[in-house]
Figure 1 (cartoon, rainbow, N blue to C red):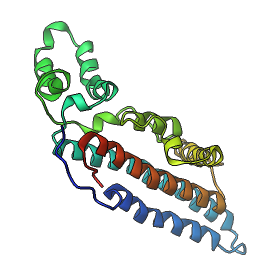
Figure 2 (cartoon, rainbow, N blue to C red):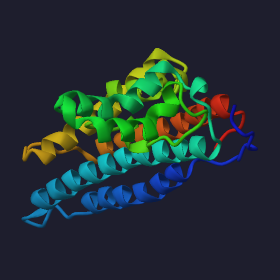
Figure 3 (tube, rainbow, N blue to C red):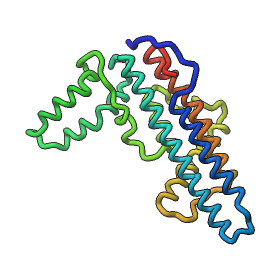
Figure 4 (cartoon, helix red, strand yellow):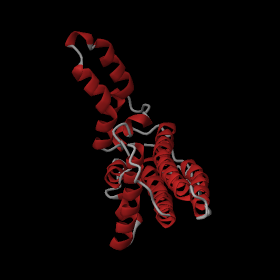
Length: 235
């Protein structure tokens, strides 16, 4: 059983940082729109600003996911949550990396690793009543915040389909998924040197709206999910 902590009527710290960071993307988008067509280098400048906005927005989005995960796990640790309150899938994910590392070692060299595993994860599998969770282990598998990865992540917290949880209609859900998918795909193309990976100002604005909508609404859903585990919401 978690310690009961009163609900704070505000978004997560991670969302506050995201909202401030997106202002950078808005500035880049505005700078691109203000480039004069009379400048011979205008197309090149607009392309560079577009690519910069894509990378920056995707980076801020990804950072939000990691930051809100850290915030949620810190709250669980502070609340001294019992292992029995956590879903089996959650506990398996937390123990996956050290167990796989153990499996790859020579049998006679496993003693120290086994002792370390019992110290870090033994409480999850019938040892001590409470212990410390590592936030980094819950996202070690995520390469980029694509829709399918986001669904997988929030499912560990007991949210079956985060996109269904934060939208009311299939049309809104489809637009939201598309906006996030386009942003992440274009960011990956830019990172791999695809010079044609650009977006119009209206597309970038749509990506901004998708990121803001997803994070604002998922922020509430994650707070509720943690609250169900702890008897009090973290934000």
